Image: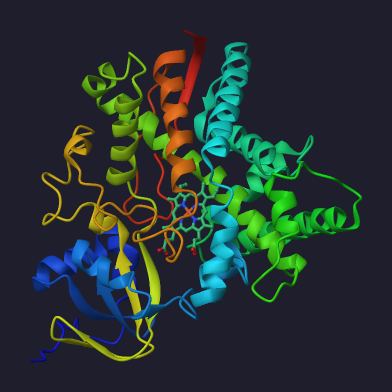
Length: 416
Ligand code: HEM
């Protein structure tokens, strides 16, 4: 028995999306008493999904495809063209394997150690400064150095440029006008530089270590046994560099949580890994980052009595699913200990996408993100003292990415 999906009437609701931001889908889900509804965005019929049950549906590869789902303007800034995000089926599985092959235990251990080392150097150099430090900008530099060492992509003395330009790619992803163009320019500049490096690897002009991503991706062969186009190798290498630098956003939210929830910080002072992890997980659940992810209906199907028509743009609410009242108790409270009980469902806690890593589009870098955040949290709490002067700590609920407005200003840094 079929019924009609709740529909938000009207020609276009893009403006409301801009206004309501991260809460757009959850607001309508409450209004319609439904985790599935239809609206119009940029005059296109769009299905919105929120909550665990619909996330399960969204990650069913027989029902949805990523081909043609990402808007061009997002490809030109955030994703790059021809990368893993827009692939489907065997081509996706094969390319995703290239990413996941990097995520070994040893390699995760190494990135934690690199992160620890860069924090140590940063704390020392901040200790010598008597001006204020903008944690967001400094974190981007720490992470650009970590990313460079981990991938084998040399960035030399240009750390300020690289961290700024990799930052622009995610800072401008949702922007319009001049900011959007800044993001596009940053992307083409970095793509060109990385492509030159890939060419040099292939001619033997540079010889990175064989377990580095620069080497592995440059020599990777696709399902037909062919080397991947140099431009696309560059896009995929940037799919490592850019999001590693983006963890700076989470580092700022981590610092904000440290400030707002001192009773939770007390539990971190022994350096116990489980406590650090719970805090990090709660930062990723609680604060906004990616609002939703997009796919298109692969073939007509019916689910829960609702008809999904082939080709329909469909958004899965990431922020709202992490805050869904059906799945989370007191979702709007910051409570790291909720993760003691969490059953590790791949569908209710999805700040970096849900489902499976290998066959789905769930974030390839989720483990790295957690490890880098744990090291960063431990450094902020246990390895340094600092002051947080009066500043604008509020964050927006409709900017992507959102960030404490002052970008976390600190001063009088001392090693503990
Ligand atoms: C995909 C978020 C860090 C690499 C994704 C997706 C989200 C996401 C929402 C899409 C999931 C979907 O559409 O189903 C984040 C956030 C991060 C982060 C919030 C924290 C800053 C990283 C890191 C890396 C990475 C550190 C790599 C080192 C990727 C790749 C994909 C992806 C390659 C595409 C996967 C695919 O299409 O199969 N990420 N990510 N991300 N992420 Fe991340």
